[in-house]
Amino acid sequence: MAASNDTVLGVLVFTRHGDRQGFYQDPTSYTTTTPTIITPLGTAQEFQLGQLLRSTYFNASSPSFVSGVNGTLVNQTQIHVRADAGGELGVIYDSAVALLQGLFPANADYKSALANGTTVEGALAGYQYVPIESVEPTNDVSLEGYTSCNPFNDWTNAFYTTPEFLQKANDSAHFLTLLPPFLDNRPVTLQNIYNIFDFMLVNSVHNSDFAKALPPTFLEQARALANFHEYGIFTSPQLNGIGNIAGRTILPVMIQELQSIADPTNPLKLAYQSLAYKPFMSLFNMTGAAQQSPQLAGIVNYAAAVALEVREPSGGGSAVLRLRFKNGTDDQFTTYNFLGQTGDVPLQSFIDFVNPALINSTADWCTVCNNTQDRGCGAIAAAAAQANAAAINGIGHHHQRISPVGAGFLGAGLTIAVMLGMFGVLAFLGLITLGKGPSKARSAKA
Ligand SMILES: *[C@@H]1O[C@H](CO)[C@@H](O)[C@H](O)[C@H]1NC(C)=O
Ligand SMILES: *[C@@H]1O[C@H](CO)[C@@H](O)[C@H](O)[C@H]1NC(C)=O
Ligand SMILES: *[C@@H]1O[C@H](CO)[C@@H](O)[C@H](O)[C@H]1NC(C)=O
Image (cartoon, rainbow, N blue to C red; front, top):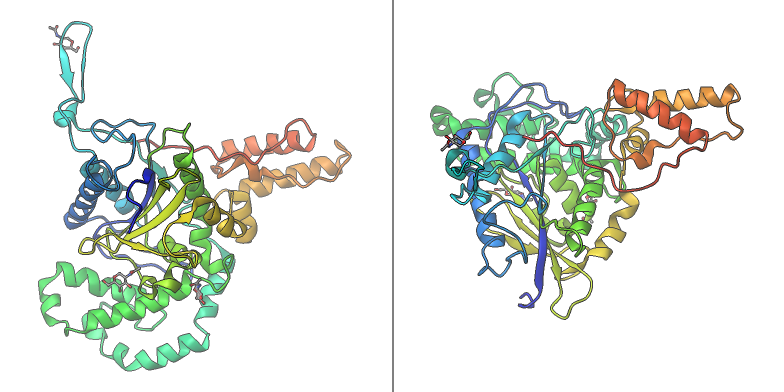
């Protein structure tokens, strides 16, 4: 199907975490109310996915081999990894660690000669350490744009009053009455179906008495209802609708990474983001992939992966994107059409298409989510107030709204508040310009 001599310049991979213990998320605000951890099965799934990515993208005889990548020894300028450190606590971060262990196995050549003549091999027989940026929702909105977002809460509540939802609630009412013997005491309503499905799935996998007792069709019936529910919440009829917020906040980072991969002067080859299931839904909706392939309108399985391959067409020319998706451990990578087209799509067309919906910074997010206190919005609001106060006190002549937008996804906390305050005043005084440059990654390396 592919023109065989095009070149894979690199790939943006995003994955869902592996199998984990049960958790509970509020069906309106999507805040998590119980802790969870990854299971041994979850680490095995992610490790296996890492091995598959390795054989697909790092093996010179693979048709998708990434040109110029060093798949033997990690070259840290070629790889950029981010992991959501939000509601599922360490699950998503640990998934990234396990995947990377499969992607870059220990190598005896990870060693160096010391001044005294001894050669030392890296720990664990040359285990290769890859930095992972831990993305904390308190100071970075990019991977969990939906929590603490007032219009999003309004949207979930509104969804529960749509004729479509009420019809589904009516149709599933009898089924739901059969479930309490198989649940703990969580509410058994269609609104709460994600948590119901989660409980049934986790116990089907880990509790043999439960797995034997559960009537054979129940898990799939609950899954179908959960798919309907989550797709209704995490998508929107409008590209820039609030239901798509998980996609709208992650896309700026993704676009930056895709552009870096396409840029011949930039060493990046593999960008990898470890995620929850929500951004997958928004992205399949926003790109129209779920319209062209309706089976994509559901919750992705554990260790599901999207690979957006950046390719240079065989005759040269501008980079194109290929969308491949694998719905969990038991599925295979399949190429999907998107943007209403067939086959590869020019990278620039993709960027132009989603551009009007992007939430490019924390400040943008605070505006969209009508939030002046959480996730860095307090600092931004305080800086704005300070700049306004300065204006009122006659320090400057123009009434200018400060815009820390260009500073990118900013961290919260006192330091930032002070910094923004200073920037706000300086910007206000016209001493500095806050440009629209790409955001600089803060990293918590591990
Ligand atoms: C050389 O230095 C390393 C690291 O300090 C040490 O482990 C090793 O024993 C030294 N070798 C010799 C021959 O002194
Ligand atoms: C996105 O999802 C909404 C439902 O929330 C649906 O109405 C719309 O058609 C979908 N858009 C595309 C392009 O598939
Ligand atoms: C993934 O597979 C599950 C069933 O295993 C299905 O319910 C769901 O819709 C699929 N999701 C996507 C995005 O393909």
